[in-house]
Amino acid sequence: MSKLVMPATANDAAANLAAVRARMETAALAAGRAPSDVTLVAVSKGHDVSIIRAVLEAGHRVFGENRVQEAEAKWPPLKTEYGDICLHLIGPLQTNKAADALRLFDVIESVDRVRLAARLRWELDKRPELAARTVRYFVQVNTGEEPQKAGIAPGEADSLIEALAADYRLAAEGLMCIPPADEEPALHFALLGKIAERNGLASLSMGMSDDFEVAVTFGATHVRVGTAIFGTRQVAGSRINDLP
Ligand SMILES: *Cc1c(COP(=O)(O)O)cnc(C)c1O
Image: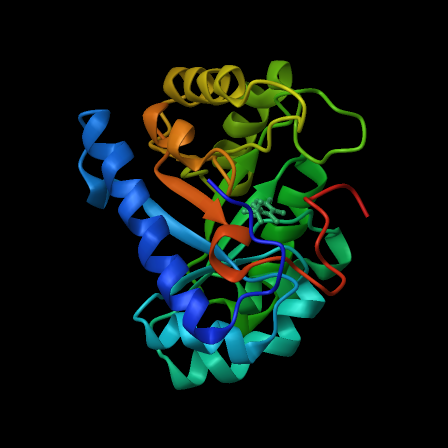
């Protein structure tokens, strides 16, 4: 597979989207899974609205952004224009941005600590405008236990998942991970699958441009693909989910 070294044009992005979908389908079928069981989250961080629009026009509706502020600048008009968008927050969430995240995002994939859960609950209870929001939650697990990366340690995941449901009424739908760049991703995908299984969680968000097919083989229900669709990112917001 050749690597894209340029930001994609609108035409490229639509063609890349179709190619990624086809590769996902092949991987799913090879693993004996239904292609419809895997959702493609198109990661549009670092790209501007003109190219995002090309992917929307191609019919895609599920997108991921890693920064609340960047997403706030890009998505509210698009959400109004294309009513059925599902926006995932895939980057670390600071507690002081919790209310903003709840307003804009439909899925928060980066819940990784009790303090954040408490703040999300508090904002939801306090702000009447959030009462109608039905946000979904994933717990981010730092499967490689990398100090610079967000996510709960694997050994503490069970208790956080339990607390989310029992203490904060924010039952997690699934788990998310970002394997260390220099390790075999399959080991991390397998670990994430085990933690989800023993906690009875149905969804696994794992796999990016370089490894989404492996992730599908290991049971991903959501893959987060940026570069393979949009090309190389040229603006801030391009780091992979390291802590701010
Ligand atoms: C940027 C990012 C992605 C997409 O990475 P690509 O390699 O461009 O596909 C996926 N997940 C997270 C958490 C990210 O920050």
